Image (cartoon, one colour):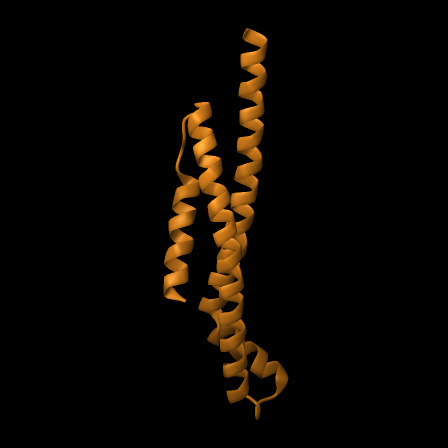
Length: 117
């Protein structure tokens, strides 16, 4: 799970980096983002699996406790995994929104070039 978190952080770092509005750089960024998007979907599935596995393992230990108490205890036991799961979900959405924004920028640049020629 730690390795997945490191990878999530690396991709988030890339997404936060400013970039020039040069069409070639934008195309290169789109290529990298598409690759990151594919990987982020895989990361999300892996994190969900690890989360569910730990949740099940911890729930087994709490069979003798009332369901309400067990639910509260479980939240605490899997809090780190829940945070990583949320980050992996948000990473996928961040990449998708950034791709949409960059495509709009590229369209604007294209229209600007067309209008100035």
